[in-house]
Amino acid sequence: MSDSAAVQNHLAHHPDELVSQLCEWLAIPSVSAVSGHNADCRRAAEWARAFLADAGFDAQLVETKGHPIIEASWLGARGAPTVLVYGHYDVQPPRSARSLDDAGVRADGAAGQALRPGRRTTRGSSSRTCSRRRRG
Image (cartoon, rainbow, N blue to C red):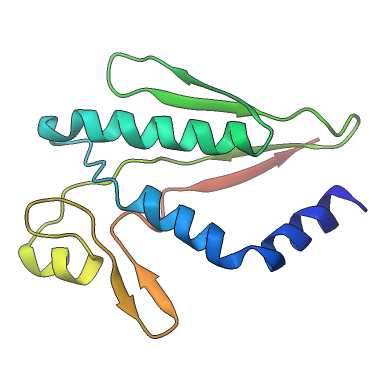
C-alpha cells in the first residue's frame, strides 16, 4: 500500500478519533496577543508537536523571543518532492463579543466549539494566512 493510500485509509477508518483530537487542540485558547494566554500558547504548541511526533514526524519545539515554533520533518520518501507547510497555532483576540459567539470562543477568551449541523467551528480552526508551497 502506498503512503498516500495508507493515509487515506487511516482517515476513512478513524474519523471520530481524528475530529476529537482536532477539537481537543482547538479548545486550547492560544490567544498570542494576550499575555494571560502565554501558557495556553505553549500548551497548544506542545500539543501540536506531540501530535506530529505520534504521526511519525521528527518534531521539536524551537524557542524564540516570543512563543515557540514547531519544526517537524519526515524524510521517509527518498527522491520525492519537498513539501513545506507553514501555518500557525495561535489566534488573535476577537474584535467584539459577537464575534466571540460566532467563532466559538467564550467571552472570557477561552475557546469553545460552535456546533452546527455537519460542522464544528471555533476560533483558529481556519485561517487565510496559512499557505502551502511545493518545491522540487
